[in-house]
Image 1 (cartoon, helix red, strand yellow):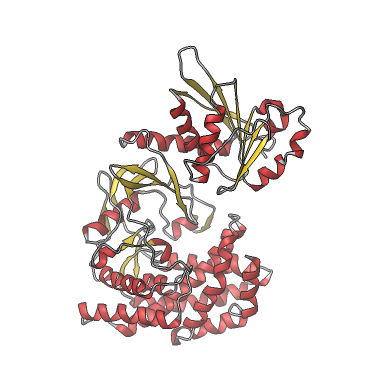
Image 2 (image 1 turned 90 degrees about the horizontal axis):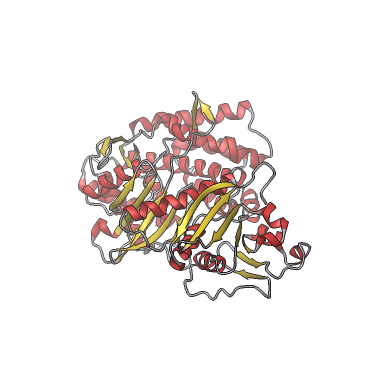
Length: 517
């Protein structure tokens, strides 16, 4: 519920020409609602409250034909959308005391609540995060006066900005559908356009976090993209080189909005969430071809500045592995790491990063694994592999992306398949470049696979502790299995000993994380 000090403040007044415009507002609002939101809809009979509520609920349920009757007599109707939504109509409410009997508080805790006639219960006004007052002006049409709490107001302005962006792209009335989300702050939607489905990327510039070293936040040290410009630059470079990255159809770099090609919905995993070996093999060959390109460090942005690819350097990799010390280890051990433990950890990784000085450098996409690879069966060669989510790309050890694929954090990749993928990659690289060093690659792969797994263990606990996202904990046992598989490389003997002393690979600890999911 909204808290004291987080009062509703005016956001905007929108003229709505007709019922279609009212429905569009409801659907656009649904794009940015979150569990805990309470949407209070007020206005006279016929002002459009039920029209707006119906469109909002259908958008949340992703079902344009969903039957959404007005709960005038039942007072409340629940829908198993994602997140769940409860629709209250309080017109016949005799007293505010009945609200608790209807499960109002429980509905807020479970998901999103939409309330018509909120003035019948003062509790609704106190709980509302968004209030929309609909009226029928003398000149015709409807008028929606919108107020919201500070957090909800930011989201409302964002969804209205998306609608304006679509209008500028020639799609003023295009229906929007929630697409998918990830562990970042980016949002995605799909919209129809010119006979094809398009993807809208909503990625506003992110503020810098708390400085952690040399006055810089983690995002700056680890070279995470702060806006959409890197995505545009890398997509353009990949397409120019013959790879299947999305075409950029419309861009507002300042607003952080992109309208891009939809590469399809084919996956490299099956319905049981298992790797499809042939498709993973094609991905390995795609990486081999990608790493065979002499990528420039400066990538032009059409209509914008030149993007300088950041280096995946020692400082960035150090900040990443320290996520294990800062987030995973305190949760795992039940206490912060000691100064001696930090020193030993730093010593081990400093030596490994010294070895990486000789590693082959290339364009590193950063997250080349099953959620970010589109299988395109009708294409040929590398074009069968659709590439997305590369806005954090850098110039660094080429082996990193191979490890991302062959030790997929979201999917169980067997040791046999991992070996087959790395062998296919090496064979393709050697056939294209007789000077390719397979033994150096083996060392680089082991170090980067361990670096990635170490980093992700910290990230998944951070997603739980900082961002309230526990769903990633289920992947921790898999990451520990990959670590156990990789730490046998001779270069990793000191780190293997340290992780063994800490019990990080202990099977009982892995089971604890599985049970916490």
